[in-house]
Length: 287
Image 1 (cartoon, rainbow, N blue to C red):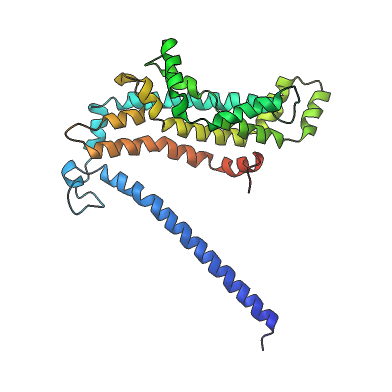
Image 2: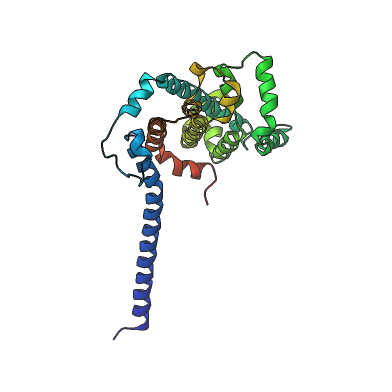
């Protein structure tokens, strides 16, 4: 005869199993919701235009055709667009990580100087400003400096952002003071403390910020559209929009460009996903 305690244990075990099944079902549903659009994009890029617009919709090309990808390299300056996006995204991402780490170290709890709180508060306040509010002043500044239609016009406004400073400040605050004090006792300069202690210990957060910034700049469309007016200097996202014709649009070619443009992002996430959990802990953003 089962005791009440044994019955409760069986019920608790069944409840945990049911919760696990529900979690798996939710994850599977979310994965399917994400993968179906990706699958449709890839399969449609191998269709001919007539098949793409046919009814009913085909979920797999009846006669796989790679002409859409061939057109990207023969009729479009796709490698140049790709290179433009890579250069701009890498420069901005590295700059944001570098300057955010320096600034975050300076305004962290490791230092105390007059006006530090006000300075950090001013940096955070810039996060409240929508880009549409500062776009016109930025455009006038770029025009005054003679930087319109140059890569510098795309890069300069994104060299530093407040979110990166906040994220790295939180990460630096989590570093024990004993490490820095030990370095100072050994006669290490502040630059040595930064390069030998702060940077290695904040590396997961720096890597996560690098990914976030790279992805944001890679997908940037509005600002490049404003400051770039020559075809060879277009970024990938900007070029894809201009692939649409006034009277006809080659959708398989556009979807092919979308597939190729997503490859660096997927590779970047695949190789850097291990940094995200550690970055959430070190940055103090854990739940």
